[in-house]
Image (cartoon, rainbow, N blue to C red; front, side, top):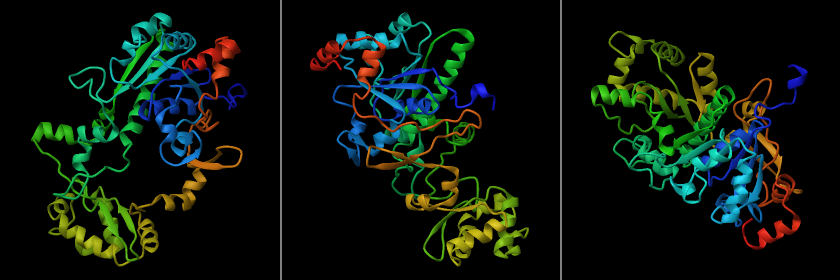
Length: 403
């Protein structure tokens, strides 16, 4: 690495104002902060709700806050008050990206819509995260990740055949996916600004990232009218490709997406008969006799303990893995060696473990520099040191609940 880039981060010098709440918008800002952006987290004087969500570490910081507000600087500011808006505008003049996730029209009512922000700073980038986006008949509806999963068709797929739709894994998955797409949009807009000198709006909706990840469901329905139903652990286009229980009561995930993979599985099971012309040689044959071949594979997997099974199948180049609990994740040597779990100090007496930074860059990697800050921890630094407000003025603003 050239000496001039050593210890540098990709977004050094980029300043982000995070006025978003809960998860999707703030996660966008968190990703930017992990790669060097200075993220100023603007909260109401009483603090954001995530601070008190779940297990607490101290009086105003939950484990969720420590992890998801990492690398941020906390200032308090009431954007519903005229003085708060004036202070915010001063911060905008010094910033590159603003992230918000209120219902469409909210920041316009506060007097800080994009038209106002670009008059303050013509090349400002405004990232807008909402349930349904800034346009369309549903734009004013409230939304959460659970609603996004349902609206975009994912919840319909989750569950056993004919059974109740269930939560498709993490209840917050749409928040994280939307945050990632928003960070990607912010970086595209920032690149465009560097090349063309323009600012712009990045508009993301909670449901859209989910909708984008539905395999071939959309073109398939458009062409054939096929509606994919709930299939439990199975998948529509590949068999055997599911979850199976082992002899010792553990569960594994088996992937078999090609006929060649199935041949390797048959070799591992010592079942060459399954490759006969009139048996299960092709994927089309296996799909047509899904329950039968799944039963054969399940019986084989159920005859071996998990670790022995995984070792045997991997030796035969069959893709298989344990279905891990979070406890398993903490014991996994590969996860440990990759640094996917990072232990950080939460305060003077306690440390916590949080997920590591993704993706990893070889020359200018991201980092976790600090965990979620205490409320208003950076008021003096930002308002006093950066905006030049006096100690008396800060005291007056605090007493008036502006900050």
